[in-house]
Image 1 (cartoon, rainbow, N blue to C red):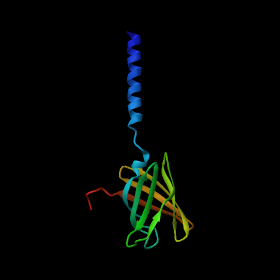
Image 2: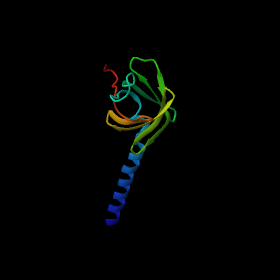
Image 3: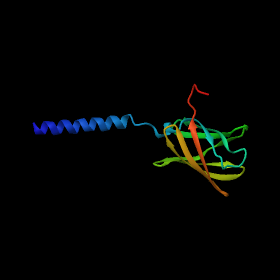
Length: 130
């Protein structure tokens, strides 16, 4: 009986563990979608806009658009890690390093460039809401 109980528990735990692995979400899906961002400390014209992440095949791609501008900036070197995500952008010929972390439908981050750090935050745009 003891052997049966132990075997049953081991099989039960393996089933739970395996089903968790099979249904584990793709970490790219956390970021996929459109986000509205604000960066109050940023220079005028760069303080608000949209961040869009898309999954293309096995790759997360993205770009940002500033409010009142048709200028699109594509993300470079997107890396997802345990703490969030890192990527780069080039704005007016200057490299900017971005670091973000997500909590539900909000992410916060920093943009580092030659003049220092700029904090920003973004909220996910929920489809069907304006």
